Image (tube, rainbow, N blue to C red; front, side):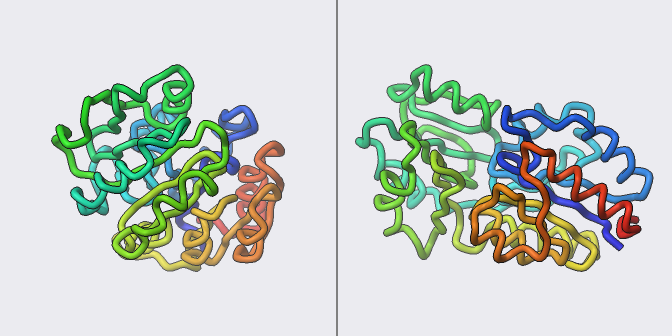
Length: 268
């Protein structure tokens, strides 16, 4: 029986307008009645997830920042800290590319450089990082680094950002999370590793877990659960990895998938 259900956010749970789908509260009620824990599993900041899921702050398990920060009821369950000096060097690698912006993702906050702040970047930041500080230098930050993120306002992150970061593969992993964003984390962490840590702590197996995803940063998540669902709008490789498929995020595919699991008597 399924005891834990995880879902990516953008392109997966959220609709085309970036909103929770109608019927979400009813699905969560049904899961609650069956004792199934729900976990947003996203590249978004923990505090951004809290904003999205107001009222569920103490009920959901939050796998934030692509699994580098996991919290439940406000307490840290698991985190993955980067090597700070090398992380800062990577953040400097793209600073001269027009239209590319960097984010130092810390445990306490997200940090961006003052000279690079403009309306375009600020609007994008608000989607994913609700706790943000503007600094003159990343070196002045008194926080641990759990992730470095890079935004391309032209939507060609794979072409314009990734080539500058691939030399850091090894100590870090570099993953495109969309056409606009590239994330860098420790080599030994991803959504899948975070899920495995949660499974150990909760004493549950992959057969007792379901997950929904759409993009390449969801690949390891697909491999860490038995009930892996690719969205209809998912990347072709994610569809290959997943055991099951559901409708697109525009059609509220996550809710459809969960409802089917409930109706088939697999939850509880």
